Amino acid sequence: MILNHIWGLYAHPLREWKTIDERHESLPYSLTHILLIALIPAVCAYYSAAHLGWSIGARESIFLTQESALAMAVVMYVGLIGGVLALSYIVHWMAKTFGAAPTFTQSIELAAYTATPVLMAGVGALYPELWFMSMVFLAGVAYSVYLLYVGVPILMHIPEERGFIYASSVVTAGLILMVCLMVTTAMAWTNGFMPVFAS
Image (cartoon, rainbow, N blue to C red; front, side, top):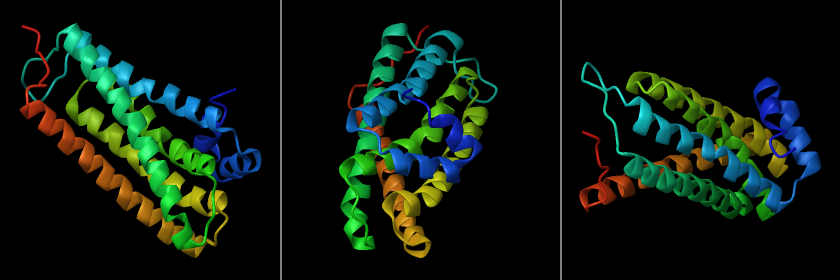
């Protein structure tokens, strides 16, 4: 089953990382995992923006037109997949510095399974309150960072001390990627790609 590691990553992450390391799925398997999990935040964001409305503070709920919400969901989906693939490239590129020699598929596995809690936090968009979504997103980020620190030594076959520094470097790179995505979004909005609000 394509999504068979998700429960294990939440219930017993250390054991699940060892299982992932033993099996080493194929590249299509890892890519399919990313493609399916990235649908969660995109679909939930579309539904909440077009049908539920976002509540920010004491103001009335904000709705987008269905066309605008769909366009933003598609762009979000592509951006999330691109972000995970970029992170896997960074994981692969930095590996030699820390004495690891993973295949690119292993790097994608690490990035995909590490990003899973952040992407699954997109379910929180079904309760479109800004404070709630922020808390769910922060919880997803925190658990993803935890998974990264646990998984790097196992998947990259390096000592824990070196794995800690490697994982810290990946976290830093991930934060930089997130900021780049936010800046790109802000630039797109100021250059005519703003969402269309429903009246």
